[in-house]
Length: 129
Length: 270
Image (cartoon, rainbow over all chains, first blue to last red; front, side):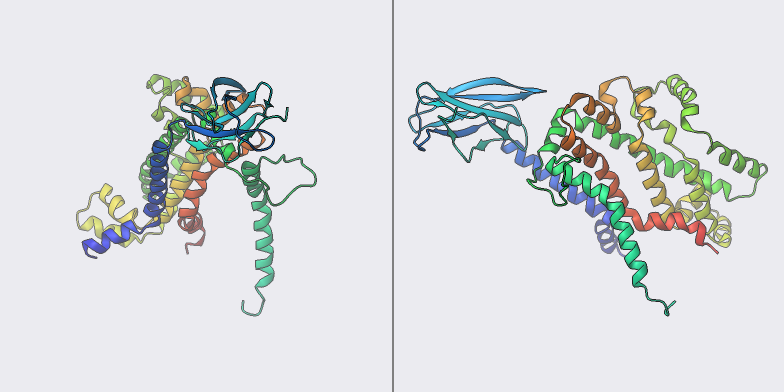
């Protein structure tokens, strides 16, 4: 058996291939995490008719061992958009309210890793409570 | 043999296989759905599949640290098992004075449960200064009598003339083991690796007794700690079980052919 075929048989061995594939998946996942963990949470607040709500107060609640505690709050801009820029958690809740318009449900958000950047797919809807 | 249809045997084996796999499936299903095991009517197919219970486990306890501890301790146990058991198994293939007494001692020691010897084991580990260390965690499992006999039965199957030829060529004993016996005993090595890994991986009592710092705990201890933290544990607990089981399952699936050969080689040798 020459040197090349010996190396080929070693590298194609399942005891090398399976751990190698697992190592590559872990590496790729960690690279993805490292490039997407800035803690940015973006979303929008709308009223019952779906119109954007400016100057609504949006609160970020993060999971603290057994309960959720409020970490910070921001205000929506003229288009109803809001942005948190340093969420440290993987398990959070977001709520919004504006006097005279109403308040939203507290929406649970589960992330795949801590501080994952996320753009919420559905807006927070005021006026239900 | 050819006169009898094989399908009844296959049918029965498939049925038995399904029965054995149902608990594993149930754990997997609950870990990705969180559906309560007592729900009625029970659902076979999980609804609302998501990985968040796994993420909960990963962040609720220092899972990566426990995993590293378990991997390090298991690796030490596996390497020591293969090395020491091969040496002991090779010695037992030779005739020497008191061999029967040694065999009898080994067999009788198998009947003594580890719980009965755990205090001396703790004291010896303490005297060696290995408490709260990876080596100390692996120490009682660095050699197991069952695995010595697995090597012995495998080495017994190697033709005597091969060993004699190696001796005539001037090979020392350790090179006979390394270059002749071990390459011919791959199934015994695989059996040693799997058994040592699984026993070490699942060990609970010894790490519980000898670890002092939280950083040195292994996964089974982490599971107990996790249970004390969480109130609503259904999904997360099952996810934890899958995360603890997965490495052992992967190892077994990779080496199952050699593992089965290793366990049956003593039985089929003529």
